[in-house]
Image (cartoon, rainbow, N blue to C red; front, side, top):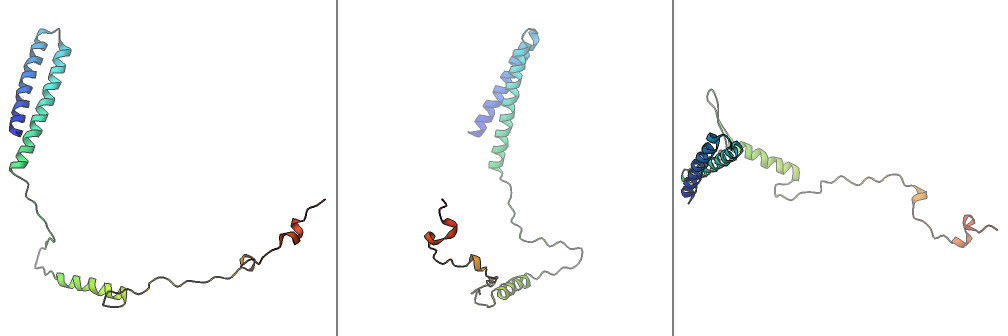
Length: 136
């Protein structure tokens, strides 16, 4: 189906190019020739894109999942198991135990100085408050 689409677009490109050339030869229809050529180039672009997709479907790109690249100018030794052991020991030092149960690592609550004016308010009888007495 993609091959048929690419061929149809290529045929459309050729037909539009011929019409553009015919309009340009007469000299009076340059605007029409320009429009036909623009459409022809769009059809060619779509044809090329369709063929690229078809090529990718037929020959997919090879995928490589590289975990580690060992590039050295001389002898090189890679010890991956040591890195895993270091990660495990780092987890143990954070948790404080090797069983994976984490201790409470939050900072202890620091109590500041208490402000007596902001402390618990005692019940106030508003009728006896001198600042609330009506004047007059």
